[in-house]
Image 1 (cartoon, rainbow, N blue to C red):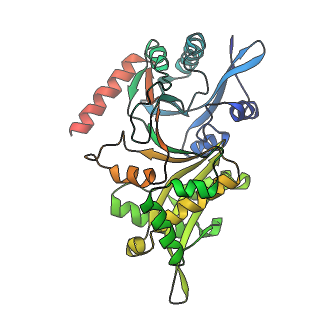
Image 2 (image 1 turned 90 degrees about the horizontal axis):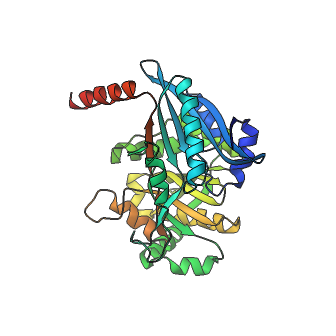
Image 3 (image 1 turned 90 degrees about the vertical axis):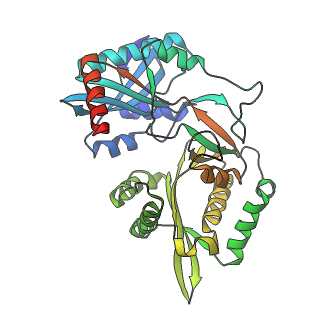
Length: 354
């Protein structure tokens, strides 16, 4: 095997065929990151003159001039192939360490175990726990992820629209139908309308106390992905007093085999009257069916389902459409320069206590 740097075009060709592909592992996301001071790199492992592993990584000085190497949604490789995992990460570690790196942070888009709709383990289902053993044998430690570890996913392969709708929970079906009776209209926004989208998400973030993305982020994502049809900003409108009023909005990625529901917001005044988020989800599920996507990814839920924990309502909303819980491998860190790493950990604890 041979560890090599590769061209972005070569990486894209490999990623498009990888079973572990993620929109986070794209040259477009590398460009987005570069706007915020990160430098992108592309690495691969060649065996018999064929790529068998690859990744997009970004690096940025984050502590005393030393750099964090971050791999969102990757690397793209078989984590149960110990020989490949060892070779890839030992070489990547050496490269990053020799190029001022003190920390490697990865978040693979790689399923760990098979779970059902309730988040319970499926009897006889797959388990990729060997992947964790392989990472830990190299010194990786699990840490809090930047991206969701638990997802909720609806399989669409060989599903028909009527049958799929009938499989939703009754309350979900009722609210979709109610939005239709109320005259809610759903359509895709163009770039010039993204300020309307931002107004909705900003109101929601203030109400629910989470950080919203900037308008520049939404516009940049549009510029990077819209031409390929890989990002969609969807808005629901209600007709009031002869004018259309925005009542809900959501952002989706369409990448690989899936449609991914990323961000959303609702106007509080109209939320209960129109239930427009249900209309938006049904609009995009039908889009996914029509365009032969294999699954509809509702994206993150906050941990395994637990009625006593915050965020359970988000899981219940997504569960109403059917589907099952997906548990990913999670986020892992590998110190590259232990004195710097431990100093950073110590100072971070002091800041949290202050």
